[in-house]
Image (cartoon, rainbow, N blue to C red; front, side, top):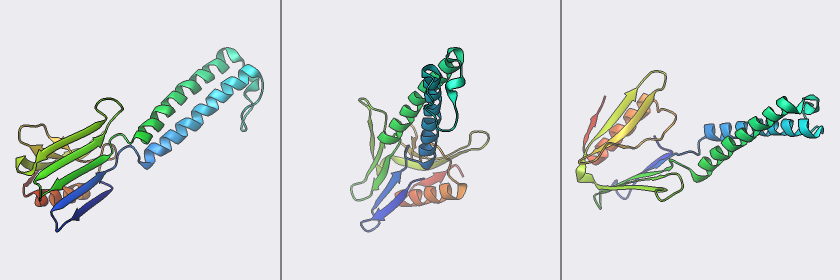
Length: 189
């Protein structure tokens, strides 16, 4: 669920860091898209200027209209996508933490969002308002395995990261640990 879970202060504070966009897979795809798009753009420019700007091939033999032009447009579109991917990683969209403090009786869920007035997403609540911890499992082509916090008068609040689904044992362990810490039931098993 998280990159790290910390229980301290005499087992009265549970702090869980949630991994956002700074995952290895996001770095991998941003790098691949950047390299591929740069190659396409340089091939399009090489075909226009008739100067080889690439190491691996010689795109000067391409006719600029339509092949070089289309390759340049694919490269420009790919670089826009790569820019978006790198910005999401830089801003760590989806990253944050879950904090459950029994001393003060509060819960704080924090996530980073996209830039704007709602960049900081903070949900504060009281521990006594928690009804249960819910596990949601959906198998199939697009599997989803997540933990939710069910609070009186609110929609269920997701606690796990978005993206790669957790293993069932890890999900059950984290859910049981949280339910035990909060003194509520665990639903959805």
